[in-house]
Amino acid sequence: MPRFAITPVADTREVQVIRALCDGCDAPRPVEEHTRSGRLWLLTAGCFELRDRDARHAVDPSMLFAFAAGHLFTVRHPCGADTCLSFRGPIADAIVARGGGARMPAPRDHARLLAAVAAFRRGEGDALALAEALCAAAAPDDRVRTPTPRERALADELAFRLRIGVGGRGSLGLGELAGAAGVSIFHATRVFRRVTGRGLHDYRRELRLRHALALLVDGTAPIAQIAATTGFASQSHLNNRFRERFGMTPRAARVGLPGVATSRGRGSGTVDG
Image (cartoon, rainbow, N blue to C red; front, side, top):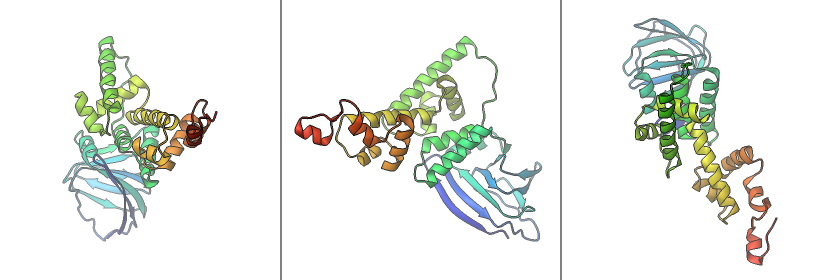
């Protein structure tokens, strides 16, 4: 039987991810398996053969493979060892409900999903970014026709409701944001990106960075506290994202922007410009 080295990667309300390294050593005869809940598998290395009641599949790093709970299958490893990311949770269940089998993520969506997973391994993961990336990778938007004026108006209204949801206090998940707007998670992610040109997570991160900037230039709270207040995993996480967005570190923004008082300046009546 194959042996697996399992590493938990992410455990959020909507998506749980594990990384499984399989040694590829098969039993003499295939053993029928099933999953206890909906699953999505994404190989990052290797290839294996999967047989189910529908067909024989070559599962490789170009696809996401979806299983419903209780789906029966067998796996063989003619290519040897492989590395797989396994996704489960409410977002995976919603994806699986649309049908099992292989999905071919677009390259950009595939890269976004891998980046969202990698962020958790660095301690900088974001639950909304992971849920949104998984949703986009597993259910790409293939529509190319021009929307009608009514469709554009409905899309604008939906994007408005989603912006209100993201901008409110707290950190609502993708399912909560979509549910509050009365649409599916797939429709929410597609329409918001189409209307605004960015994802829900990108928009939330922008709001958090602007909030952090305001606290830095008009307050004395430690930067680590500001990072926690604005939803970043750590001070270094805030430092990295802040530098990417504003071209300076949070500390530089606090002491270097014109009209921003330093803690020393507040005590002496001077302003460090």
